[in-house]
Length: 122
Image (cartoon, rainbow, N blue to C red; front, top):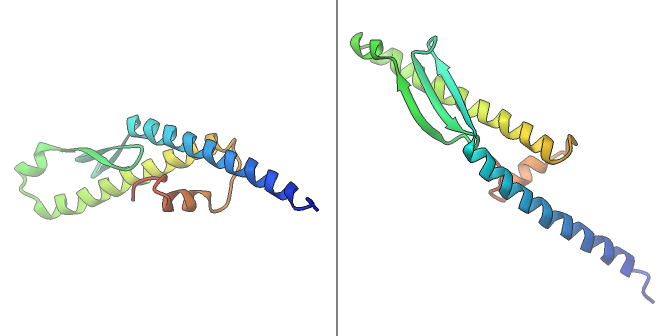
């Protein structure tokens, strides 16, 4: 009569684990907000500082770029520096996720968490 209740107990444990993971993800997100990465381009002529979520925090431009009035070079270096900072933030996020999941590579977990707004900023 109650043969299917074993599955319900497993579902309850799964839900509890999901709630714990959600709490850990919130902690991870807060931790990543406090971390810093730097992407640079043009041998350091342009640097972009971002947090671990990939949000840009600061841009530093070497004054010589302004002195040379090399707008085209600056327009090339800025996106490169932003992209590198974002890539470093994604790598930091992946490292933190591995520590959170005990080093297990869970296929699709990062994509699923991104869909829930728990992954890195895009």
